[in-house]
Length: 636
Image (cartoon, rainbow, N blue to C red; front, top):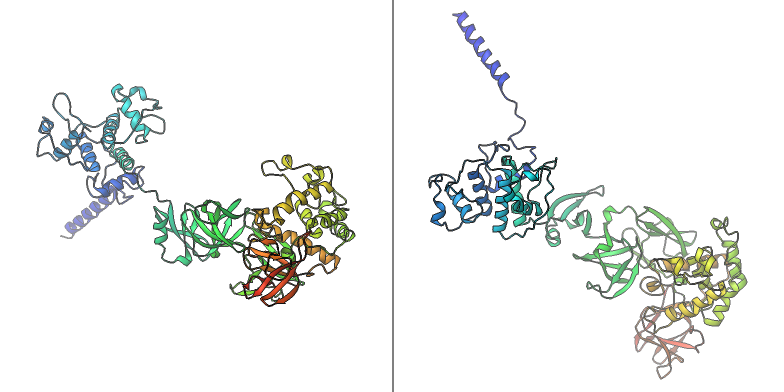
C-alpha cells in the first residue's frame, strides 16, 4: 500500500515537473506589446475596427483575407449604403456569412469588387498591391485629392501594370511606404499589422487629428517645467489652467502665457500702440527686459520705461519670476548709483555708474526700476522716486566746463584698454570744437562730447578714425562701415552732426521723432527714437556724471529741473497768458531747466532756460489752469 502511494506521488511530481518545463514563458499581457504597429493596432482595436482573435491575441503577423479587409474598411468608413440587389449575388457570399454585409457595403461603394466569374473569394489572402488599390478607392470615395508620383521602390517592376497609377497616388499622400531596403514587395500577403497601419493612416488623411501644439506645464520648485497635458488651441490650454501662479501655457518648447514675470526681447523688437501692429511708440534691442502685463495668441502687453504697448509674441520670450536666472537691478556704493544690466544670452552682468544715488537708497540693497526714476525693493514695495540730473537736463543748456577742462577729462579718463593701439585718445583736443558748437548752435558741450565718447569708443572706432565720424552718421546694420559718412575732419563731423542731425531731429518740436531735447529713456527724450538700446541715454549720462566727478566744477545740479504735465504747453516770452507764444512743447513729460519762479494772479509761472537764440522763456506751472508743469526730485 505504501509503495503504491509512493508511486502515485512520484507520478504527480513528474507531471508537475513536465508541466513546468513545457510551460511557455510570458513576456507581455498580449501579442502586440513592443510591435512596430502597436500604436495603430491598439487605436483600431479601441475603435472596434480591428478586433483580436481572442483576449490578448491580435495575431499581428497573420495574413488578411478579402472578407476581413472588407470588414475593416466598412467599419473604418462607417459605410451604411443602400444595397443594389444585383451586387449581392456572389456565388460564394451567403446572407448567413459574417462578412455578408461588409462585402456588399464595400462593393456598393465601389471600393472592392468581385471577380468576372461571379465570385468574391472571401477567404483569399489579399496582397500588398491589392491592399494599396483598395485604399486608393477608399480615399477616392471620401473625396481625397491625390496625384501621380514616380515610385522609387527597387521592385516597382513587380507591381501589376494596372495597379501602378493607383499605388503611386496613395504613395503621394504617404498612405503606403516600403521596407527599409526600399522594396515594396507587392505580391506578399498583407499582414494584420500592415492592414492596421494603412487603415490608421487612411483615417488620419480623411480626418486629420488635431495638432496639439499647446500644452499646460507646471513650474517645479527648482524652476523647471513639467508638462501636464497637450491642447489643440491657445485658449483651450489657457482655460485648462488650474493654478495659474505656478503654471504656464507653452507652444512647443516656448512659454506663451504666464501669470507674472519678465518679457525679454529676442531681437530688435518694436513696441506698438495696439494689437493691430500698425503704428509704434518705440523699439528695443535684443535682451531688453520689459514688464509683462498680459498675453494673447499673437501679442504680449508690456511696459518699457513708462510706455505701455504691445509686442509681437514671436519677437519675445516670457520668463516667469520662478525661472529667472538673473535680472537687472540698481544698487548704491560710495554715494553713486550703479545699474547692473543682466544679459540673458551671456548669463552675466555689466555695470554702469549712472549718477548720484537717491537719498532713500540703502547700500547693499537691490532695487528694481522700469524707467530709471521710480524704484522698488525686492518685495515689490516702492522705495522712492528720483531722477538722474544728466538724463533729464535739457541739452540746449550750457555746461559750466571749459574747453580745457573737457580736454583734461579726456586725457585723464581715457581707458587703458585702448592705449595699446592708440596711446592717446583721438578725441584729445576736441574740447574747443565742442565748446564752439555749444556757443554757435546751442548743443551742450559736455553732452555732445559724452555722446561722441559712447558712440566712437573714445574716438578709436574704425569709422571714427577712418572717416572722422564720431556718431556713426549714415551707418546702417547691413554695412555700417561702408554706409557711414566720411568727413574732412573731426570738426566737420562734429558740426554736421549738430546742424543736420541732433538739432533738426531731436531739438525741434515739429519733427515727428521729437520727444524732448534731453536724453531721457524709452518713454521721453532722445532715447525713444535714437537708439534701440533702452539704456543708451543712461550710458551717455554716465559719461557726463564721470566728467563732473573728475572736474568737480559744480555742473551737476546747476539747474532745477522740471517736467511738463500736459501736451501742447505754450512757451511764452512773458509770464502771462496772451499773444506772446514763442514755441510750444507738444508732449507731456518734456524736461525743462527752471531759472526762477514767478507768482502771478493766475498762478505760479516758471522762467526756463530758452533754446538757442530765443528770448526769455516762461511756462505756466500751476494754479487757475491746473498743474501744467512741475519740479522734479533729482538725485543729489
